[in-house]
Length: 228
Ligand code: NI
Ligand code: MN
Image (cartoon, rainbow, N blue to C red; front, side, top):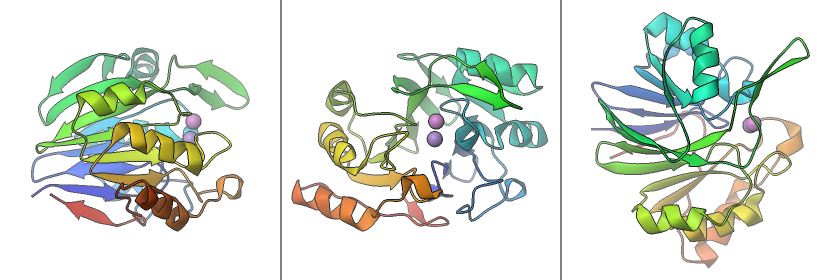
């Protein structure tokens, strides 16, 4: 039995008896997170970009669990310089990990680690297509809408599409509906909303808009999981 678990913002876990693959583990400082870093025991940590609300607790989790960080090259090298074990990849590339294959997709956004006002650029941000327990999961990362999502929809039979809907820094709900139409996943799940007041959204409204174009949407609250 495998599960997709939501921990708030853009943090999801894919887990089974053997693996726990956590994506964008922003837990400390996330007012909506249902768990703290010590509650997770990841084997792999996938990070879309360097912003604090995505890199989050990745370094601490990697060190304390001997977990492997998978990220775009520049971000992976940054994490390595902080003592983490890493697997560097880049957009368009895929690699078969022990739990399944991961492919990096483009994401229109920025990527930097910002410490005490200093900006350390960490290359291009990404999204992930993850194969896990026979399912295909697309985590879009932080991105605006882009037409090549159609290629992802055409080439992968996606079971779950995890799409930001917060607006301001990422797609808003209207663009996320257009994205969902290109991706045509079995279930579309909104993320990256309501964590902070600047990107407050109504996920019910988003799911209703999906229904109007014959797509299934599902709201996951932090702590909710889907079994498959
Ligand atoms: Ni970001
Ligand atoms: Mn973000």
